[in-house]
Length: 499
Ligand SMILES: *[C@@H]1O[C@H](CO)[C@@H](O)[C@H](O)[C@H]1NC(C)=O
Ligand SMILES: *[C@@H]1O[C@H](CO)[C@@H](O)[C@H](O)[C@H]1NC(C)=O
Ligand SMILES: *[C@@H]1O[C@H](CO)[C@@H](O)[C@H](O)[C@H]1NC(C)=O
Ligand SMILES: *[C@@H]1O[C@H](CO)[C@@H](O)[C@H](O)[C@H]1NC(C)=O
Ligand SMILES: *[C@@H]1O[C@H](CO)[C@@H](O)[C@H](O)[C@H]1NC(C)=O
Ligand SMILES: *[C@@H]1O[C@H](CO)[C@@H](O)[C@H](O)[C@H]1NC(C)=O
Ligand SMILES: *[C@@H]1O[C@H](CO)[C@@H](O)[C@H](O)[C@H]1NC(C)=O
Ligand SMILES: *[C@@H]1O[C@H](CO)[C@@H](O)[C@H](O)[C@H]1NC(C)=O
Ligand SMILES: *[C@@H]1O[C@H](CO)[C@@H](O)[C@H](O)[C@H]1NC(C)=O
Ligand SMILES: *[C@@H]1O[C@H](CO)[C@@H](O)[C@H](O)[C@H]1NC(C)=O
Ligand SMILES: *[C@@H]1O[C@H](CO)[C@@H](O)[C@H](O)[C@H]1NC(C)=O
Ligand SMILES: *[C@@H]1O[C@H](CO)[C@@H](O)[C@H](O)[C@H]1NC(C)=O
Image (cartoon, rainbow, N blue to C red; front, top):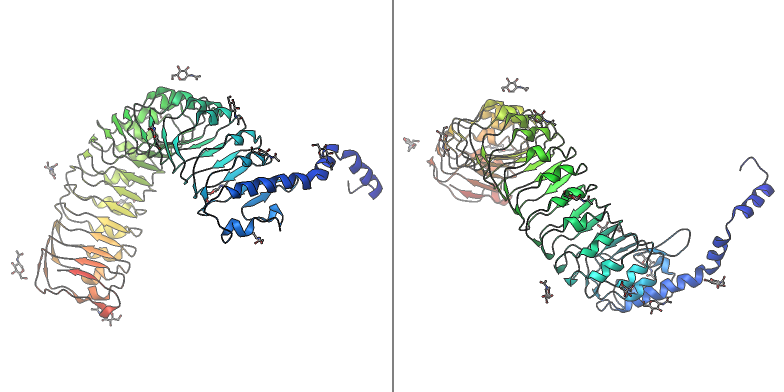
């Protein structure tokens, strides 16, 4: 328009200006008064908020609604579009007058102590997209009519950390625009109604952890084709993982830890979910071997399957998981040598827990190739031989636990190269020789050292007293001659010293 004269611009503007906007502008003050009285009615249902607290002082007719704390108004209509009063320690019920905030898009009351009914009047709000009701005191069964009436375009519904019980009602299927349904940390029970939930054809995130869901995973789970996150951690779900899970081509997170799932981990099926990044299966009853198809899940970042009954060796194909950051296979029945050179192909691996498995053989020197490793746990894993000097190459290592194995020989001097090491647990082995104190004192971040129940000899070196971060040092049940028990460092740091 810059090319035309100001007069032409003005004419163009008058022609283009839609008449409903004129009408809206004229009526704004009246409509904002409606919002004001709705919010004041809302405030009057809050029992904990006296005139001295946040809303009491702030929500007054002396200032415009749009400047009230927690209130956002639209820039065009100057009507209340968002209300965020999260974490204000408010207690009370939700006034039905909330249903008069007809421009409301987002309502956030997370982290208060609201109770009573979810107001059906919210169904009148045709612009409403996001409801955050998590972390409150709502209780009883999920209200069927509430879901039935919510025919607006609700997209995100957060109800986690309340005390809802009973089952997920069929009426949830009416929410055809729902993308996020967050129900974790309640007391819901029954089978997960996958068939009903799959009617919410836009559903991307389903959060159901820490409830009392039971029964099997229905095969209709495969109909939730938009699903990216399925979290049913910590319930009582039984049976096997259905094949249909392979239909979820958008799945990124599958979190089923702390349930009662059994059978072999269906790696071949799961590998059809080609975007799967996080697979949480710890503390179930999985058995059988780890299938070699695990190596086809090339997007995997996190694989946790600890505390099951998985047998056999770790397959070579696991080395294909070039994005793997966390591998936890502790507390299983894995055997054979720890396949260190295979695992070292997972060049992103940061956390590796293989504890409490009946492995055999030594810790190969290729351990030094796992240079991204921050945490390495292999306690109670029947490891023999000595600690390879190559361990000194793990410059990122913060936590090392090789307790309760059959390790022999001296601690290699190279341990002193681990400048980020915080915790060193190598008790309950058959290690011997002098404690390499001058090496250990180079590990300036060391906080906890456990050398107990080995065959170390000689005296307790003074350098230990120079390790400023040290909080505990145990060397009991060895053959150390000098016996002392005192606080070192003249009170600058208090070391719990057990010798
Ligand atoms: C406000 O809108 C109503 C219709 O909703 C209309 O009857 C009334 O005349 C308008 N008021 C003004 C001041 O424009
Ligand atoms: C209410 O709170 C808002 C945001 O904290 C603040 O900007 C405003 O000045 C307050 N108004 C009064 C009257 O205290
Ligand atoms: C606001 O909502 C209440 C309860 O739903 C209703 O009784 C009242 O008439 C409404 N007020 C206005 C101004 O719309
Ligand atoms: C609602 O509040 C929670 C907690 O403060 C916050 O994490 C979330 O982003 C908020 N959501 C919206 C849409 O304001
Ligand atoms: C909710 O739906 C029921 C039945 O469909 C209807 O009778 C009731 O009036 C509705 N309530 C509201 C507040 O819209
Ligand atoms: C849900 O909890 C209420 C108490 O808050 C109880 O009366 C009711 O029986 C419970 N319902 C189910 C299905 O457990
Ligand atoms: C849902 O899944 C079942 C079993 O996998 C299938 O038979 C059915 O056709 C699917 N329904 C829809 C609506 O996609
Ligand atoms: C899966 O892995 C197996 C064995 O590692 C391999 O033979 C097969 O081609 C892979 N399948 C796909 C679809 O990548
Ligand atoms: C421990 O490893 C040795 C070989 O290093 C093997 O013979 C033995 O069976 C293993 N013990 C257990 C309990 O797996
Ligand atoms: C792995 O470690 C061995 C022994 O320390 C070494 O000879 C080899 O070059 C390393 N391989 C890679 C790929 O870094
Ligand atoms: C401890 O550190 C001090 C100064 O940093 C140094 O003088 C002393 O020799 C060290 N003692 C031991 C036993 O390393
Ligand atoms: C303990 O150490 C002393 C001398 O340091 C040595 O003579 C003795 O054999 C050692 N005992 C054991 C059980 O290693």
